[in-house]
Image (cartoon, rainbow, N blue to C red; front, side):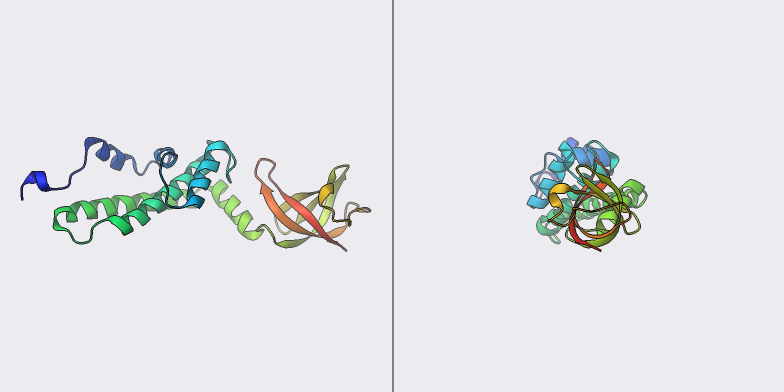
Length: 196
C-alpha cells in the first residue's frame, strides 16, 4: 500500500475544518446542507427568512442553525465514519476532536447568550397548548391583553373569545390557552378558555 492509497483531504477541506468553530460560518453552511431530518431543514429555512424563533440575521438565529448543523454532522459521523480502519484512524480522531470542540463552543455561546436562553426559557415555561391563569391588563376594540405567570404577556384577539369575552374589564381574572409566541411583537397569542 502506497501513500496514494490513503484517504486524504483536499485543501478546501482544511479551510472547512479551520472554520468549523465559527458560528456564522456554520450557520451559512447549514443553508446548503441536505439534512437527514425535515425538522432540522425547516428550522434552518425558517431562520433564513425570519419565520424562525429568532429575528433573521440575529446571533440567536445563527446559533440555532449552527446547532442543527452540528447535530447533523455528529449523527453522520456516528453513522458513516469507518470503525477501526487503520488507514484513517488518525484522521477519524482528529475529525472527532474538531467536531466535539465545535459542539462545545456553540454550547458555551448559547449558555452565555441571554437572548437565546430567555427565549428558550419562555417557551419551556409557557408551551403552546398550555392553559394559564392571568389578569386582564388592557381592553381594546380588537381584544384584550393578559399578564400571566412571572413573565407571560399576550393578546386574546376578539376572534378567540369563544363566546366568553363580552364583559371583560381590566383587572378581571381569566384562563387563557397559549397558542403561539409572536416573536416580532414579543407576546403570546392567546385563546380565552374561562372567565372568573
